[in-house]
Amino acid sequence: MSRCLLLFLCLSLSILKGQGVSLSLDSAVREALIANFDIRASLLSTEQSLIGIEQAESAFDWELSADLNYRERLSPGSNTDQSGNSSPSSETINGGLGLRKRTSLGTRVGLSTGNSYSSFSEDIATDLSLSINQPLLSGAGKTVNLANVFRRRVQSESALLEYRQAVLNLIEDVSLAYWDLALVQEERSLLASSLEVADSLVSETERRRELGLATDIEVLRAQVSQSERREALLNIDRGIEAASDRLLLLQGKSAIDFPVQQVDAMSAISPEVPVLANWMPRVRETDFDLRILQNNFRIDEREREVAERNLLPEVGLTLRGSVLGRSEDISDAYEDALSRSGYNWSAGVSLSMPWGRRAEKADLRNAQIALRRNELRREERVVGIQLEARRVLRDLKTGLAALELAETQVELNRRLFEQERARYRAGTEAFRDVLEAQRTWDNAELSRLRRLRDVHRADLIRARLDHELFSRFGIVWDADQQL
Image: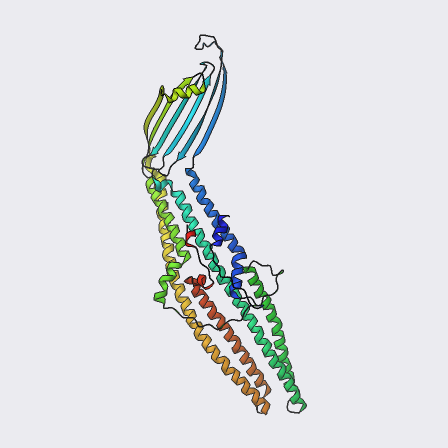
């Protein structure tokens, strides 16, 4: 099973099956988390970041090398071999095997063996060697040599945070699209109910005209009001299709292959508004953008440490030792080498320091500037979090107050409409006053629905800031998957 799949399975979702035809918000979110295109692409980016760690760690893997060379030489003069025979030509064959490894301290260790045969000497020379190269100042230590591994691991952690951020964004987008669709569906129900009232008014007005209690103008006005509502229904049906298409796209579905979705009506909501001073630390602690900036700051700190280390002179210690053997047979040559009949060893110290160290000093200045720039971005994000939290709570408070007022206006205008209609039936009120009262009632109900949607939006953003959305939709992140 791929790591990509393992990361995806770390989402523990509570799957709720709808009992009716309509699509629940929980089901809409669950389907989007499985099939949304951005989520799937973000998951692949997370998988790529894990591959990057493997690439960085591979720099410390053992490396195998082998070589084989053949050389033939014809001398213009005459050569004499060890037996005293004249040999103007000679053949040489040599080859070897080696293992090399770089350690996290910067040490380079090499193990090698080589064999060489020459027709001139008619025997095989063998060596077994061990070499060690250790930087003592610049380039030494885990801080420098593990810098790339550290960077890739932190970047992978940021990629996981970005994936969770994408999940959070998707939940918000699906919820907003869901409530937009619910709103237009509620508007259609409202218009349909209003059309029924308009139909009854037309019928009532026509009967009154037959009794001589209404004029043709009043009947025409009722019919025009009826036609306006029918046209509004056609427009709202088009809006329902557009809102459904937006929701389908977030779910990774084609609007051609799937019908217009029916969703649940918006439920009444009265969320509790948290105290800003108590709520702010939680928002700041859970903010993904701030945590990603903090990871970038960690990388910049490591880059500065590496740049400071590289300002030191390049001092290297080299140790090399070999045991040598020689024989006409290769196995005898190795036995001769292992008996240490011959050896070769060396030790040395090297020093290198570019004049002025301008490149290294420039690297350090760049690292310091990057660190300061990232620090400023972190400070800016903290301020941005504070302002956003204040705005969200302000919008939530305002939305709740506006919703309460809208509900009062709906009740008031409903009663006014019933009163105007009763007066019209009694013959004490003009028909246009009845139509105006109906329009006012419809607008008040529509305003209430929009205020309710606004409260849902504000509470959604509030739950997004403190990550309550995860628990609200049953999403649990496995702590073992932290990088």
